[in-house]
Amino acid sequence: VFSWSRCQFLTVYQQLVRGVRKFDFRIAFVKGKPYIVHAMVSQPFKEALLDIKRFTLRHPKEVVLIQYRKYFPLKQRDSKVLNIKHNNITRDLIYQVLGSSIKDFSHNWSFQDFWSHKKSVMILREIDDFWPNTTNLQDLQAKSLSYLNRRDPQRFHEISLIFTPSTKLTFFLKPRIPWQFGNTWNALSVLSKPIREVGIDWLNDWFKKGQH
Image 1 (tube, rainbow, N blue to C red):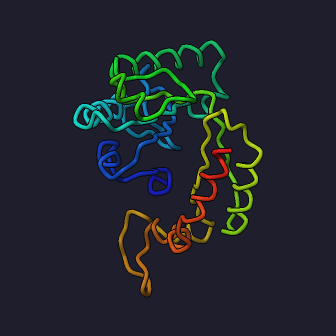
Image 2 (image 1 turned 60 degrees about the vertical axis):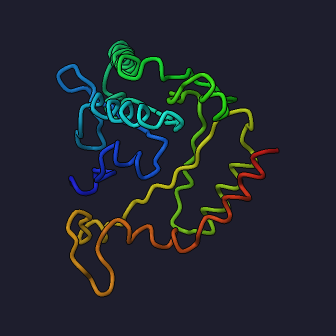
């Protein structure tokens, strides 16, 4: 369970160094403090924020986008009052750690705006995210393009690619154990290999369509 519940094997800082600029944190509270969680509890949320702070201080021209939400099963279980309390604690911690580097959410800011105002972090709110939910690459492209054509161009949006293994793969593919199977190493990279082979040239078409 641990192998599949963990989304990353790098720290937040290591991911930033390798080019990641947007984080989607799922939050759960343990003894009154927010932790990152994905089926299983990971690290204190504050540690991740400190990694972001350390990176942006060293690289002030880089912009990091943060999206956070309470882990959905817990949000459903807890009362509205408790959810509001947890959201306030999480928000206050973000501002406590990142402070003046945060820009309030805006659909219109450019990199130049971040640089001129000496901001490095934006907390994402009111964004549209889309999950194609398909195993076929052509279907993925068609559904995503259809979404792009009908979206509101005035709103921030994202398209998520989430690799979910089949039941059989889950049984024998353990991503933390690097043993070789035929000519292929058993790792999560195996699942994403078809995507890498297709390439991302078609993303340029999406970008051009999104400008209109």
